[in-house]
Amino acid sequence: MDNQTNNKVHRTANKGDVIDNSKSLEEKKEQIAVDSWDIAGHVKVPAYFPVEDENGDEKVLHHVKDAEEISDVIRQARTDENGDRQW
Image 1 (cartoon, helix red, strand yellow):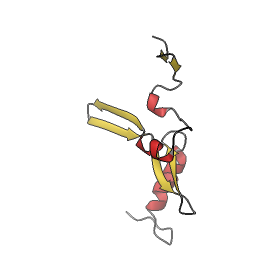
Image 2 (spheres, rainbow, N blue to C red):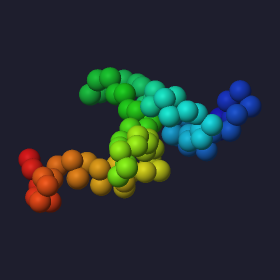
Image 3 (spheres, helix red, strand yellow):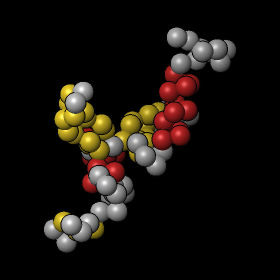
């Protein structure tokens, strides 16, 4: 089977991984990368994660392209004002 569906080429294994810069911030926040069932149950993964930048503005990080930055945000959320990890 080829990688064309309805004359659209998808360069990823998952159509939800496709980055569409024409979408608004709100549309990106609603985009789902994975919505399926596996042996563990229902798996639903958002394509974008909304975060606040240093200026307090909201932006979205793509779950593949911005994975390192998402990890940094998670690490920052786990530290206190002194930079010590909080569990």
